[in-house]
Image (cartoon, rainbow, N blue to C red):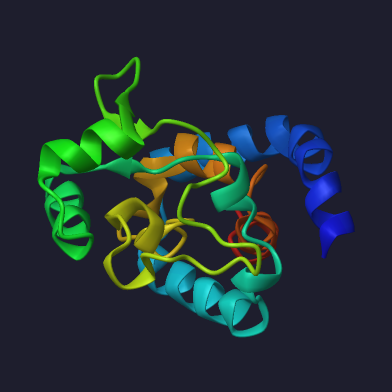
Length: 164
């Protein structure tokens, strides 16, 4: 698995132009069954992918924290929201709350998340490959294929199944 993770940025870079072209066509003319196809591909891939073997998303990127995420996680820690923000978060260039640093503060040495039950929405939905109107998040997906082996595999399978 580590070898695949190490090669992922190069693989994604090699496929970037092809993927960008594919997603541009997909946005213009998404198949009627796209949401269904994506749900199937997502379920199939995550049926054989163990995120605990990877956790590359947690090691290399930080999620965006919504106000609801902050409220929920602060309550979990029995902290005031501002205390949680001051201790763990910063405001990024888009004026969003993100982690002060990566890897994620809440990731342990066994790749388990210490706040899994209350984790941010962005973490719960990552890599967003089962999202409705998938074609609308193609820029995000182009980034995620360089981070997540499952996202990479899903996009490769998607290109085989959807002929544009």
